[in-house]
Image 1 (cartoon, rainbow, N blue to C red):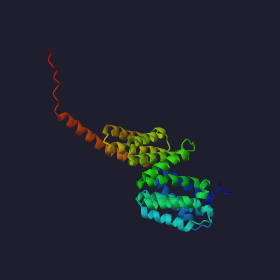
Image 2 (image 1 turned 120 degrees about the vertical axis):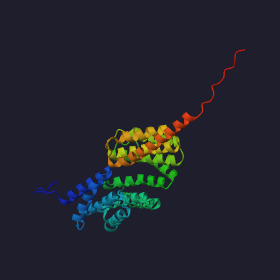
Image 3 (image 1 turned 135 degrees about the vertical axis):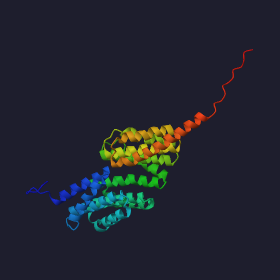
Image 4 (image 1 turned 120 degrees about the horizontal axis):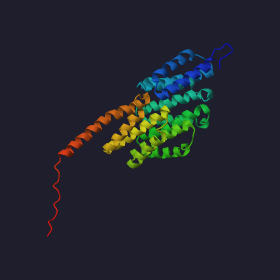
Length: 308
């Protein structure tokens, strides 16, 4: 709310900018998120106000997340180091939200860098550090996201049994909840469950699991759910390609392009590029197979025995 002179208090302005930055990161609009973080950090980094210190911590974390998606992993880790060094204290619970986001983002970057063990360690540290306060409104979202990030760490580290058992346990908690955030976490968990099933060699069950995510959420307009549907379709296509079910794979590749539409958002570009590339490959392979089949000599017709 503006003060008596109509000016927006700096704490409110900074929080609004950081909320907007996170929304931009979720939708993949990184170029919009980074200037918001830079502005809050530049203006308020020396503030002694706890409310503004929190937003500075969020600015560092969100900026690190944004630049990591541009491939600047080491620079991102420097941001998270600063969050931890400047703002973590067990005696400063008013700053824990910013620290939690920094820890979650760090774990995700480590996973992108193929450092699954370090990622798991940071997630365990985060979940242990804030366990007693996990249901605080400001900590609930990063803490639940950490729980589903653990599944991705298991799967990327090829610990598929753990990934499957923990995803099924989370689904018992999440499934059927109408809270939009938990709907999203349900979709994340379904995706990781499908990946774990494929990793364990359960091909038919994995295909069904990828398909379930698509069927449930294909009509959603939420950018994050749309991205998860595209990821599920891409996962299904990968399974079909590896099993050499080419006509079926071609149908899924077409579904990826149809789901993305003519103007795909940033979060859909990877599945779209995957589909375009593999569609050409599959069409060539099917054409070659068709030409081979046409050149094969036809077996002679069966001779009917002459009547006696």
